[in-house]
Image 1 (tube, one colour):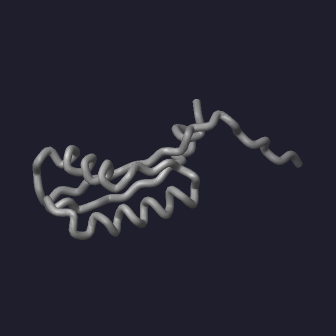
Image 2 (image 1 turned 90 degrees about the vertical axis):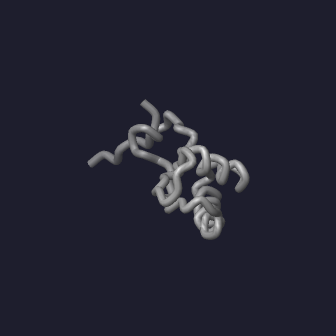
Length: 82
């Protein structure tokens, strides 16, 4: 099992989707900054927006969760002894 699945290494944003992208850019900017800090790849804004529209299924006033996962390295640090 890799670290992503075992420890939940990743980021997410929960967004209230109203059918317009007024505040969505702020969510994206926060997600993008966090992804850069943790060295997790983040898609371009246009892809992010398209994913939200697709996930909403054409509905408005829904809550959506957008997740970014780490690379899932299999490396585990040794536990300290003593």
